[in-house]
Image (cartoon, rainbow over all chains, first blue to last red; front, side):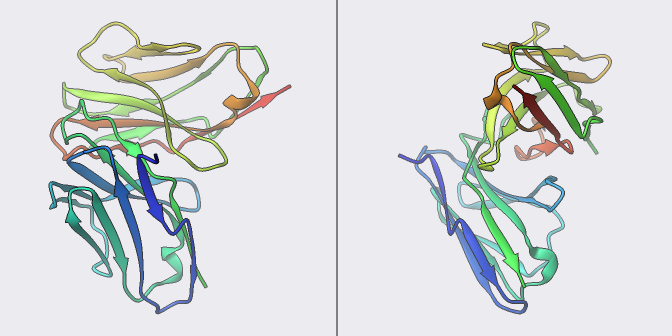
Length: 114
Length: 115
């Protein structure tokens, strides 16, 4: 059983479109995250949710909206896609936000905006 | 704000040899965790090893060990008996107790292993 899963794994779309990436974890964790990995492989936190509550929003454009319908799911919706949004997006989860909570990553979603 | 720096964009090692990847970080906090993650071409992020800042003893996981120098804010990863499967991008990451659990990553070091 996959611990943290993301769909889709690949997403190719045109500028201006709206798209969503879904994430699910079956680890029973309280906290979920979205990270963005750019073309230079640099990883940066975007959002974090703890028990469905947003706790981190790292200066991400308003076009990005996370939604957590329950503890096991954290989706990322992106409006009006731009070329610069092309990246790999990783979902991750941890038991809690404390330092003891190791993060488990999903396989990533490669988003290409043309 | 905390920062993590990996000054070696690329490293190379001969199979069965030992290699050390460098990482330095900057923080004013006393309680934190440090991690090394491996990202092979499959792009899956795999936790290699972690170190609690309050522990003086260096963490070890099989062929992987760290040299944690808290005063110097240095956290290097040593890979012994390198194997072809060790070829990957390696990321050093920092996590504090007070920032919602987010990981702050370094720029990464691309490790190649020569047969």
